[in-house]
Image 1 (cartoon, one colour):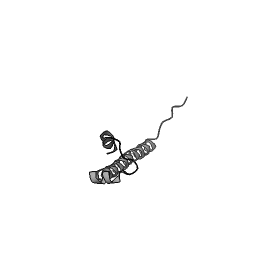
Image 2 (cartoon, one colour; image 1 turned 60 degrees about the vertical axis):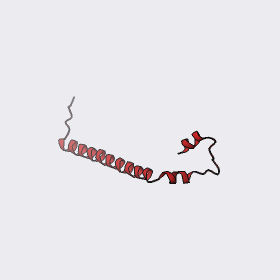
Image 3 (cartoon, one colour; image 1 turned 120 degrees about the vertical axis):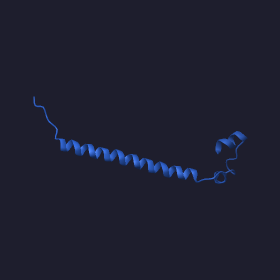
Image 4 (cartoon, one colour; image 1 turned 30 degrees about the vertical axis):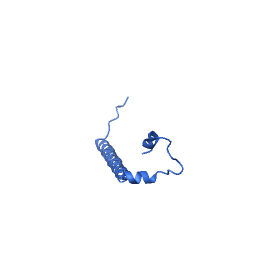
Length: 69
């Protein structure tokens, strides 16, 4: 049986590509997370309350009011 040796150049190229994909994926996920975080922080409490449609979905008690915020 033959022992197949791996070419070190091919192994190096594959490892470099794998590292690029891992690092690129990390930064992509990080940038998407930062954008979502900015969108969530941009709304003030008044804006959140103004978005609630109280005409159609008026809460029955104070606990339901707090659940909607």
